[in-house]
Length: 285
Image 1: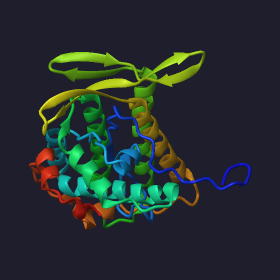
Image 2: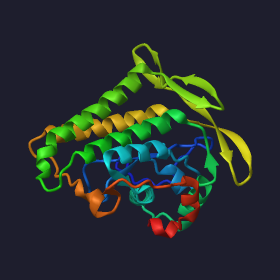
Image 3: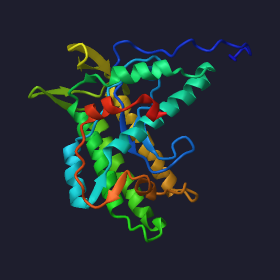
Image 4: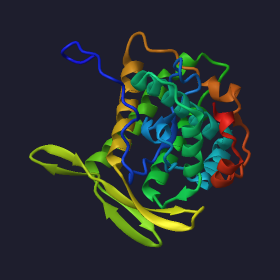
C-alpha cells in the first residue's frame, strides 16, 4: 500500500545490474537467530543475484594461512561445513526476503542457475581475500581461548575485545580509503570512496572475471565500500549488544557440536572449486 492508501502490485523481479558481480564473503557471527541457528553469515546480504539466477563472486579466505593458524592454535576448521552453512543461510534468507517483497515463493530454477553460474567464475581480488582471512583468523583466536568446562559468561570481556579488534580494523580500512589489489604481479591501488563537500560517494570498481566454462574474461563491477560498511555495522551492533544489560546468550559450543571447529590440529586440504562442483544444490536447502 502506498502513501495514498492504494495497493500496489509487487515487483515481477528484483532489480539487478547486469555487469555487477556482487562479491559475497562469509564470517562467524556471535549470536544465533531463528533464521540463522548456526550463524555463519553472508555479507553483504544481497538476494537479487540469487533471485534472478545470476552469478555471485564468492570470497574465499586463504586456506593455507588458516590451516597454519589452526595448527598453531591446536584447532581444526572444517571448511566444507563452514561454506555449506554459509550457503544455506544465504539461500534461506533470500527465500524469506523474496517472499516478503514479491509475495511469491522463489523457484528452484533461479537458485540452481545462480549456483551453476557462480561456480564457474573467478577473479583476483586479494584485498578481500586477505581481509576475510583476517576475520576468520580473529574468530579462531577467540575460540582457542575458550575452556568449555567453564561458564561461557566468563568470556564476555574477550567477546567485547574481539568485536573491538574487528571494528578497529574495519574503521582503519574505511578511513584509510586505499585498497591494494595484486593481479598478475601488478599492484593496483583503488579508493573505496570519493569525498566531496563532506559527503562520501562509494566508488564502483572494475574486476576482470574469468569464466572457466566458456574460457573467456569479462569486465564486471562492484562496490567494495558496501562490504566493509556492512561488516562495520554488524560488529558494532554486536559490541553494543554485549555492553547491554540483557544481551543475547552466545553459545560458542555451536561450532564444536556441529563439527565445524574441533580441538586438535588437523590440516584440512580444501579446494574451493572442487568443493563447489561436488555440491548438489538440494544439499543447501
